[in-house]
Length: 314
Image 1 (cartoon, rainbow, N blue to C red):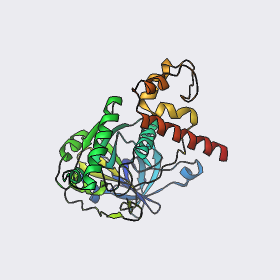
Image 2 (cartoon, helix red, strand yellow; image 1 turned 180 degrees about the horizontal axis):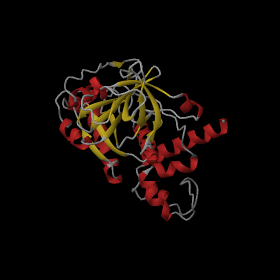
Image 3 (cartoon, rainbow, N blue to C red; image 1 turned 180 degrees about the vertical axis):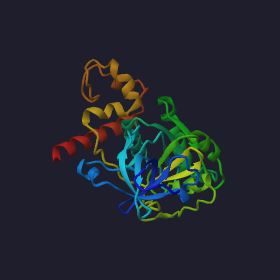
Image 4 (cartoon, one colour; image 1 turned 90 degrees about the horizontal axis):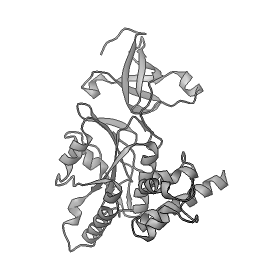
């Protein structure tokens, strides 16, 4: 795309790498052929602003054919980790087995997504590994699927079960993402790259086997990048994370990041109830009545302890 130097243009950052931001101008359908390599103005650093993949930006072309990002347009949403802006849907990809499904990690991802105010859908991958009922992996996969389906739909989370190998669930996921910017997140080795390859034929992202020693995959994705699925539909492919820290979350905010706690908290006797030791706590009453999953409450207590330890250290 040719433009006269110094004229202001708008676009979206689809990739950030080695200090460069790759911007697709508005109205361009072919992402690869239309990307403009840009630097950001030094004023962003002075103001503590960091352009993110997904940001809508104003940029100007320079004489050497590159661009300079001069303005960040207002963000609709922002995730700290993975660092991506303007996401409308978070697809939390967790394998049914290989690696084993970790409910604590799932709840930690959900807490981050709820804090960011982004809609979440749970995607259980590697469905094909549950088909051979004679294996240990199949038994583990079926138990994991049963646990997730018991705990999460009652609190409002939709579940999609997929297999990139057989194609099961791929079309339902594509339909759910249509017309939106979605982020794929989850720990390494859960099949995110394989799922993306199934969604976007010809993409051929590198995939990696699970490390037997660690029980998790090597980080196949090295950086955050927006991948075009179809017109107006993008996926932010992000590095896999096996650890998440509550860097931007306060102790008093954690309860509101658990959807069912948020809905119950108005019935607690004390405003600002932490749902731990206060009398007449609606969350603990619901827990005792079986209306709050024990695993969710236990994970909440674990995250609360992490936050208190972080506050004590700093």
